[in-house]
Image (cartoon, each protein chain N blue to C red):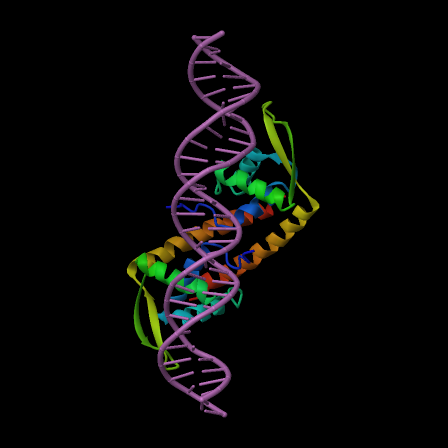
Length: 108
Length: 108
DNA sequence: ATACTCGTATAGAAATTCTATAGGACAGTC
DNA sequence: GACTGTCCTATAGAATTTCTATACGAGTAT
């Protein structure tokens, strides 16, 4: 019974968008996503970290170890140039989908 | 390389919405989805039929054999009462998600 | 010491969707 | 009648993403 909390496919876009302004470490990304979605999406570690690894593998993120605000060892992620392009692409895709769904749900 | 054409989770809602007005057979549902989304979503048989079976299993649809407009044997699906409730539930869920995403994508 | 928070990580399960393929039946044409 | 195309349903198998649950190390505070 997967409480499909998040729509499959939206997580990547949210992560990319969370990193658009500045680099963040994992939990920081999670917090920023909660912030920009007004608390609607609460990404849990088990979803977040595999996604980050996958996206780094894809070349959209790069990362390095550093120290967090609380003096903990943390891995900081930032967008690569390809990641920035991907953000644009996925944003457009989302807009297409949102438009289509809005049209469908308006249909009488 | 799954060209995830459709966002995972939207298919059910689209099917429910396609059947909101009147019962349809499988390919008819597919055509109606294309229609109400202005051609954005083209649901292929390999996605559609498993979904229909699943949703009937879940009690949201009921079906019966009949003849299509073209005099072919076709299975007609219609919403059950539970299906109608599910349509409302998923519509609200979608709206929540769409709002959250809009908020996220607006963030500077 | 102890307990708590922060931060990352992974294994395993679950679910949905896609590609590819199949086949029966009707309709139209030569 | 044979052939071809369209309509309609169906399934197997693969691929992918996300969730639950669990773990562990290290800093902080009591």
